Length: 217
Image 1 (cartoon, rainbow, N blue to C red):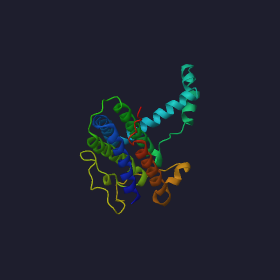
Image 2 (image 1 turned 45 degrees about the vertical axis):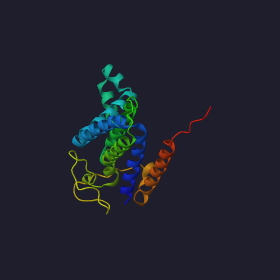
Image 3 (image 1 turned 180 degrees about the vertical axis):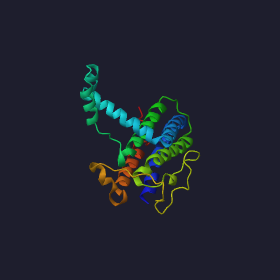
Image 4 (image 1 turned 90 degrees about the vertical axis):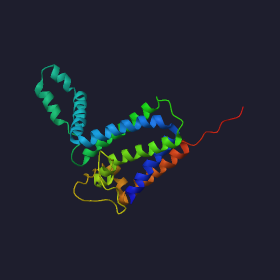
């Protein structure tokens, strides 16, 4: 039940944003999210490998591994490379895919601000709802352990739709994320703290997007 509430709140937040932004910025966001979603769905393990490689490379730079390579000290560089642990493995692999989708959502929002907004608040809000659904479909299965088919995206991820009983736990369910201890409280009582957190974000979005009163001179 909490997953349905999470889905509704996320879509509502994106719908409010789309209502204020208009149709063309939301189209830009939709295209970027769809491209990211397709890439994540088709090659998740390759993307996780890329994210791990980027992290290891960054850590190697911080540990002066490149200096060792340029100096020809291959043993020291290899030792530093072995000392770096991959961040996205096991139950944490989904965080790499979540990071990619969040980055796509942020990029879509930023690029959308460069596009002249069309005067279609209803169309913008509908596209915003769709954007919120796509982002939810990308990461909610990893958060809840639901089968990915419970949040289908036509022509990309076929399925039977999210069931009111809490979703299917059949074979093919996403591997649930192993949250770090600092975030483990979000999973208490089936994810109720996360629902409340997003509900507060929804209230803030409504308040932030309210029409501004014009001051008379």
